[in-house]
Structure formats: C-alpha cells, structure tokens
Image 1 (cartoon, rainbow, N blue to C red):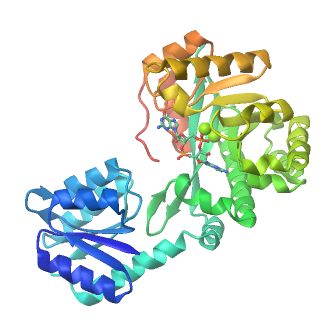
Image 2: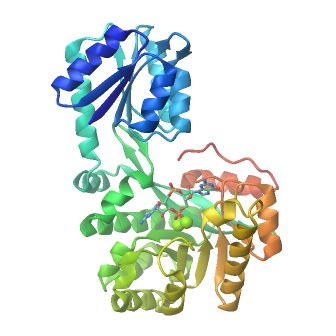
Amino acid sequence: MRVLAFDDDAAVGRLVVRVATLAGMEATAVTEAEAFGQSLRTDPPQLVVLDLQLGDTDGVEQLRLLAKQHYSGAVVLMSGFDARVLGTARALGQSLGLKVVGALEKPVRIAQLEQMLELVQSVGQSLSAERLQKAIANNELLLEFQPIVSRQPKALKKLEALVRWQHPVLGRVPPGDFLPMAESDTTTMDALTEWVVGAAVDAYQALAKLGISVPLAVNVSAQNLHDLSLPDRLEQRLRAGGMPARHLCLELTETAAFENAAHTMDILSRMRLKGMELSIDDFGTGYSSLKMLRQMPFSEIKIDRSFVSDATTSRDSRAIVKSIIDLAANMEMACVAEGVETEETADLLEQLGVRDLQGYLIARPMPVAAIPTWLAIWMQGGSVTPRDQT
Ligand code: C2E
Ligand code: MG
Ligand code: MG
C-alpha cells in the first residue's frame, strides 16, 4: 500500500513515514500543497494522511481538491485543533464522496497511527467479493432511483434502480468501486442481482401503494447470463411481489461476456417472451454493438452519456446521437438518452427525435421515499431535485 502524508510540520510527516514503512508500506511525506498535488497526480497513493492546519492552505481546501480530482483512495485526517473541528471535517470529506476512514488527534501517538494504518489495510482488503457477499447478507446495500421522463407530454416513464453500498467504515461506496470486483465472481454477481431485483420489487410495491405505478429499470450484468433459469427466477420474484413483467426493464451493458451467444439468446428471448423489456445500456461504447442489436431481442437503446454530454458542442457526437435515434426508430425500438445535464442538451435531443430523457437536469438518483415529492414538484414544473446522495 502507498501512503502519502501532507503536514506542514515535517516531523509529523517523518513519523507517519516511519510507522508506515515499519508496517511494510511505501510512504512519502510532503510539506507543501504543490508537492502534494504533484504526488497525487504522478503516483496516486491508496492512503492520504492529511493535516487540517497547513500554513498556506488548509485540510478542508485540500479535501475539496481531492474530491474534485475524484481521488478514490482512503483519507485519514489529523488535527491539533479541537475534536469537533476534526469531526466536522471528517463528515465534510465523506459528504464530498471521499473515503475518510479516520481522524487522529494531535499529538499523534505511534500506537494510534499503527492502528489506523492497520484499519485502512483491512478496509482495502475488505472491498473483496467475499466481503460484498457478506454486505448483501447484512443488508448494507441500498437502491436509489433515477427518473427517466418525457417532457412533452410531461410524464414519468420509468425509474432506474442504481445500487450503492453503505459500508460501515467507508461510508457510501458507488457501484463503480465494487462492481468490477463482483464482475469477476459469478456467485457474487448473482447474489447482487438477486438482491437488487428483490429490493426493486419492494420499491415498486411501496410506490404502487402511494398510487404511483411506474416501470422500473434494473441493471443486469452479462455475468448473470450464465444461468438458463434466470428468466424463470425473475418471473417468480415479480409474481410474488405483484409486479407485472412488462413493468420490469432489464438494462444490459454489452461486454465481451456476450460471446456465449446461444446462451445469451436463450435467456434474453425468454425474458422478452415473459413480457419483460430489454434495454441495451451505454450504447455505442462496448463491443460489436450493431451485431448485438441484430442478434438479440432488445426493445430499447440507451444512448451513452459520453455522446449525449457533448452533443451540443461536438458535431461528431451530434451525428452519432442522431444516427442512434434513427437506428432505434427504424428498428422499432424505444430510445432513451442518459446523462442529460443541461436544458440546451435536452432541447437538442428533443429536436433530434428522442423524447425519453435521464440525467441530472431532470433528477439525481434518490431514495424511493423521495420519489413522490420529487414527482409532485416536477409535474408542477418545478426543477427542485433532492440533494445528490450518490
Ligand atoms: P448506468 O446503468 O449507465 O447508470 C447511469 C449512471 O450515470 C449512474 O451512475 C448515474 O448516477 C449516472 N448519471 C445519471 N445521470 C447523470 C448525469 O446527468 N451526469 C452524470 N455525470 N452522471 C449521470 P452510478 O449510479 O454510479 O452507476 C454506474 C454504473 O454502475 C451504472 O451505469 C451501471 O452500469 C452500474 N450499476 C449500477 N447499479 C447496478 C446494479 O444494481 N447492478 C449492476 N449489474 N450494475 C449496476
Ligand atoms: Mg443502466
Ligand atoms: Mg448507462
């Protein structure tokens, strides 16, 4: 593990380096913001140990910069100020999406530092497939829902379920941080998808009770397509929850795993025969999209965010978006644009012929309990979206 300490007091930095090195880690210490920024870029550490009082800058400012750079490693804060400031800074870091795993009061004692490093190491190991399976069993996962809407006529078309891991030490972990690990292990991926579908059906029921009957989209990994009984299991779960099959849309990202074409065709066809919708997610970014589109029974194309986000500024992206929209229309498939962040983009997409939009402009992913209020405000023309919780 690589550790980077930033403290304007060189003695503290040296202490961190010594303790970390003794624990078998690779450690460096810097005393200035410039050197800190440079080390982060050239040799990203797995752990940053950050002092709050830093002379020319301060720890809070550095936390903001770390978040801006999407630093994905762990952070330990240190401060000789009062414990409450340390607590607030920790909460702030976590709300910025950083993995602030601990706070040390100064003067830092060696035993404490050792403990902290040990904790960080165990947490690093704890983002394992095995630990994820435990998280599923312990109910540490949760779903947020992001609306897919049409503006003319104004309607909520669907809600996409997006999984998050509420880790006891790391806080909220986004799917991008743990899905790759689940992808490498079929048992874990199956358990995850089963949990997600179950939780989505529960949410569907909760909304139906409030008079909101809306189809849900659930992401399914190509890893899940090894088991021919998947369509039957999905159908059973839907029946048990009183959710019509046509209200479940499965979003698949195309990956190399689709290479077992016979298996995939078997499973996907049976999902469709049972009435479920099937969407090809992140269209245009994976493998052999067009071949997939011809071979597999998709009912919807989701245009990848990367084309949508610069459609207003890049002629090429605009041409790609337009072609995908036409392709969907010609193949009699539905079409959704994801990653719509600005009014300008939404207007352009509508001009180009796609009505179903998803993105921060409409709403960020939110807990199911927030949907009714969001919907009421949005239907009345308000643009208030609940605070980003991702
Ligand atoms: P996705 O299915 O393409 O989902 C859309 C992602 O884009 C979500 O990220 C969402 O929060 C984000 N997003 C939505 N609108 C905007 C926007 O306007 N701007 C920007 N910059 N981003 C936007 P999230 O929740 O981090 O999920 C990332 C990916 O993880 C998903 O991409 C999906 O492939 C995967 N994923 C999420 N939940 C699940 C799940 O339950 N099972 C599986 N297998 N994969 C999942
Ligand atoms: Mg998706
Ligand atoms: Mg997508």
